[in-house]
Length: 136
Image (cartoon, rainbow, N blue to C red):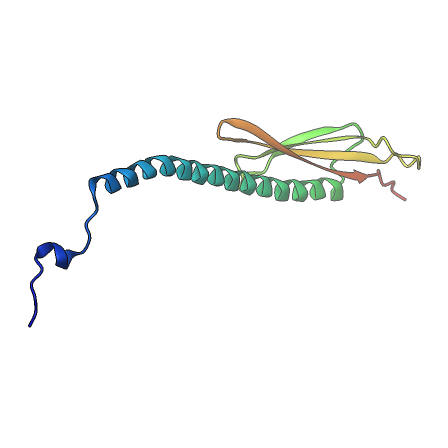
């Protein structure tokens, strides 16, 4: 024979008002901190992506400038990366390398890529050494 224990026994234990209020208070404290963490990680990922793109663009452009002999000692050249990369611009400068003891007129070519992220300018610089090749 089964006994009937009433409607509250079949539902189990219910939450009290104080438990509900404590849970809401805890969520009110924790949720903004979690959202701030998500925002910071999203910004860090965006910054890392832009710096990685800029490094790849700088490496390619610096290689092109050196291999095609577009640089000259003391020169400054600049440009953009075309419609595929509209947010990035570059500037290259060639200057005598301070550590040159060979007399070969070694130049340090520094290529700087600039862009604007979240309303602030940012940049990345990449350098290489080269010397003027003479035609023989």
